[in-house]
Amino acid sequence: AVWEGGAHEYAGCTYQLEDIFLTCRMPSGRKIWYAFPRKTRRAMPWDENDIRRSWSYQVKRGGQWVTVEAYGGILTENLVQALARDLLVHAMFKCEAENIPVVLTAHDEIVGEPKINVASATLLNQIMCDRPPWAVEMQIPVAADCWLGSRYRK
Image (cartoon, rainbow, N blue to C red; front, side, top):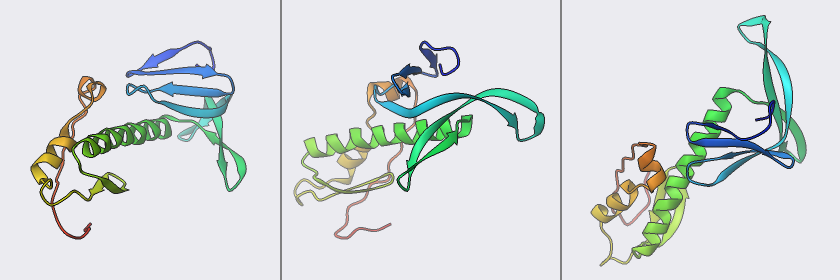
């Protein structure tokens, strides 16, 4: 998309230029935004004579714009983390709907404070393992190990 323009789809994600951004529309419908994408050419780490088309983008770090060279690993990491967040948010909304108030999240964990008569590890497991349609279509496996307790534990 950076080199040729237009929309390009890969693995259920659509990449396209929008104003000053390259966007990646994920299967969940949410977008990842890459600011100021720019065509580049880059020597491969395994052979400095192997120069390929690449692209870079800008991120803010410490109040400064910094250039990041895009490559498969970082783009995959961005996508995987974003999809994991979407799955967690899906479960958070379901928890709230089932009277399990979410009071904390830590990476891939949800901490809720339900009333004693509502507390159920089985219900929480069911909520955590329920996947939105886009995740079912992508065959994303989900597993949960829920427990009840009066204190947070790691």
